[in-house]
Image (tube, rainbow over all chains, first blue to last red; front, side, top):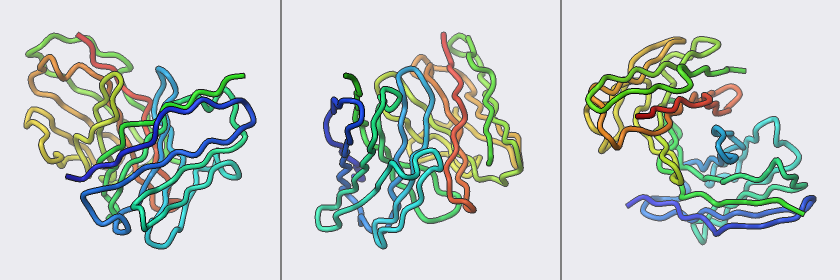
Length: 120
Length: 108
């Protein structure tokens, strides 16, 4: 079945960077975009950006431009999210989600989430 | 920038009752809207895409409607497992950004 499995929880100090992985299985990795979404404790969902694993093309949310990098390793069917300059406000659960190229396609499925805690 | 506003923030109902959740867009978006359900400690789960299409495996009691700027998620007869938070989401194409509503909590 289609599945996205993310890396484990991270604890970082302010100013550091974090890199989260998202391993895809059950489908052709390069045929679907990967989006990244985060959720702070008790809050809503916030979109960070998307990547086309075939071309490597990315589009980042305006709030995160300059701080976020999305990459992939097609030999491992894995997408990566790196966020730099961490502050306490970046503490959240980070999700990856698959998206088809069709205009009406939703985010489905989602990874299980990776908690990231930023604390001195 | 498209803003999605969900209402109510919290809806208190009992099992067996009908639930209607609203999502209003700041501009017309056609049918480019999806609905997700999220339970505590879990990732969001897709319910509805393209405003009114049920995702695979989603029970028939869930339905989506609307076009343009006003959308509704309806649960015809609530079951205990339906009490959760619901989010709407818009897929933009120019710029290609994704926008979420702030969520509606459905509580017993």
